[in-house]
Amino acid sequence: MAAPEPATPAPEAPLTGSSRAKDKSRWNWLLFIPIVVPLIPAFFNADGPRLFGFPRFYWLQLAYIVLGVATTTVVYQLTKKRGDR
Image (cartoon, rainbow, N blue to C red; front, side, top):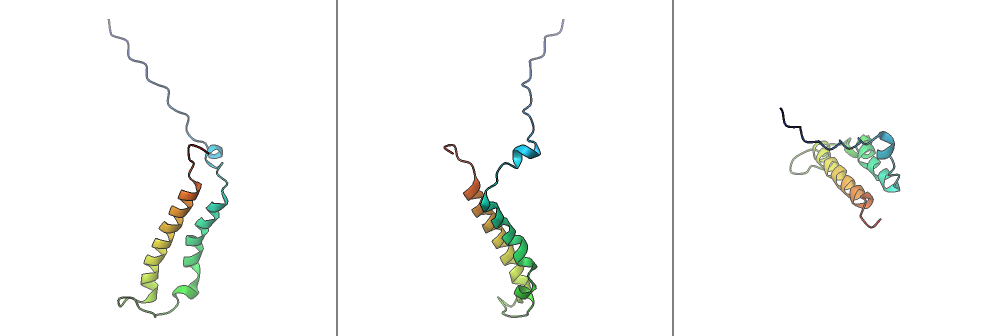
């Protein structure tokens, strides 16, 4: 006679779209900054100024990455849920 298998805990219910979209903080609007700023041609439509010999277009691509990371970090810190709230 075989030994009974141990009971496995029931899996948690997956997050649905409605349960994930409950954070309606106004801080989330800041996430549009790193999307919109690189789309403005006036910022990168020139050769100068050069930074370490690189034209403006190339070093601005790296600056846009830093802008995106900084904006995402700020929004995360301002909207994360804390235990006392």
